Image (cartoon, rainbow, N blue to C red):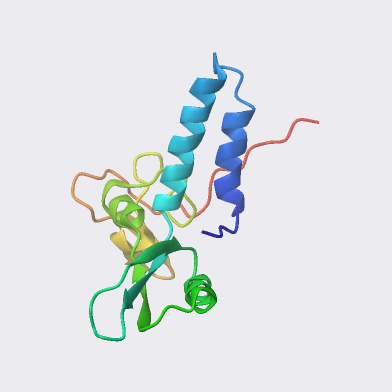
Length: 151
């Protein structure tokens, strides 16, 4: 699977790599794998389904990072029969829409929230309070708070 790194994703990995609190390489490796799994869970992926020429079920392959990657794989392998690329909707995004995803781009940066914009009421050209039951967020916060640089 080809993965194009995104700044907010690789920054989370960098944060683990430079964290001095890990007592062993094993602890760091576990943290990295968990973080990378969480990152991939927030992406939509694709699979290639296959049927043989006689109509019987073939093998399914994936995941792939894009439709083009799945199609290139099918062409390279030149399977007999037919193949179809099917999108897999991200389970991580569905969970983040419900549970919140603190600090994830596109989600509310209010520390009490983390829900997507569409869960917040419309207030002119911006978004107001979160409508998800039990969320105390009063206004959608679009960007992460700015940190002052030390000079």
